Length: 369
Image 1 (tube, rainbow, N blue to C red):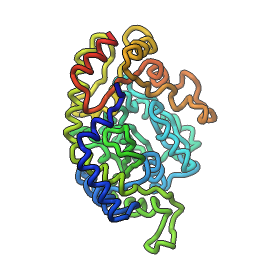
Image 2 (tube, helix red, strand yellow):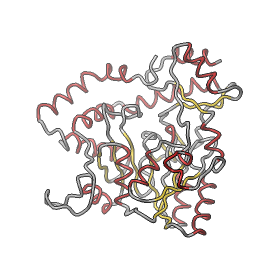
Image 3 (cartoon, rainbow, N blue to C red):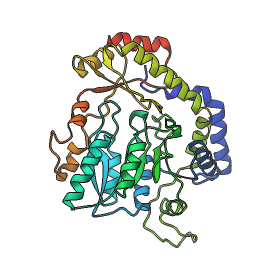
Image 4 (tube, helix red, strand yellow):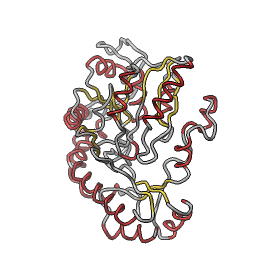
């Protein structure tokens, strides 16, 4: 059994994907070819934003966004501690300081009350210029952008949405990557909309930010290819990955429906024995991961049961960001962010993809129970 069955997806889309890839091989525009421009246009239409800029990966998408916003040394940016490393890494990459915030126990997303408290604490200390917040749509569920936008506006902070895991989900009828001043996603193969290599994108309605991003992702070039106006990155989405994504995007909504059916089947079978994911009213989830935690017993025991049955599982994330060794100089200690720390010892994720059958879900949940 596979944790994410990319082979099954490829078998269904093989003729269309192969045709798209061969078209790239025929025209030979392997970098920033017509497929990239077509994909950017389709993504903008799908999400409902004016501008999309494809780039090399999700981490670069975050870094480019911070560069476009002018973030650097002396700046503080609020990030949730319970997420993938790249969210905070991108802040450090531009020379700024990540300020870690605890998460909501039910949704695993940034806790807005904790965000308010962190803003007050660091504003009083006055050691950093408080510039923005990067909410993460963890495991496929959007963050609470209603409260986040209100808090950010009141404190004059930018909002940079990290939608690497949330593409396809919605909050209040609006799609992920349409929130904040700027938003990003990842097309890593394991993501709900993934390519066959690395890829990412930045989304914004701001014309000036979009223009700057298009320069920054190609070495900071100006109109003249050999004149540079910024220090940028070499971070371009290649044409073959764009070709793959175009065909996957065409069936994406159908796959989201299948993911939701699989998640509902899991929850129906497991709710009595495990803490299953919560999708609040007004939200939809794209189920980048289906993550649970045991009501009784150790996580390792349940993972061992699955392993003995030939079923893979995974843990996202074993070490919260504020306790990562690279951030040891930030002053956080065990106990600083208790919810992130507690959940890092309890959560584990089950196989999730659009091709899970009822029989497979039965075998997984039977092994757990």
